[in-house]
Length: 72
Image (cartoon, rainbow, N blue to C red; front, side, top):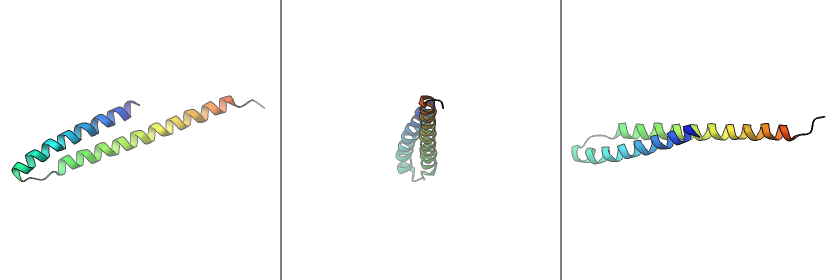
């Protein structure tokens, strides 16, 4: 869960930074590739964190159902 929260914070921060860079870029006619790269990296991190969390939760459920089976 910590990774998911950290990924959301990174995505929020990079989006805010890109918004600020957009304002500056519009005034200076410069590119936004750095901001877009930050957002892409943050979004990838978020997807990876959610995927890992889902896999771990599935594994927990699998182990719990194994424990619930009667022994033969």
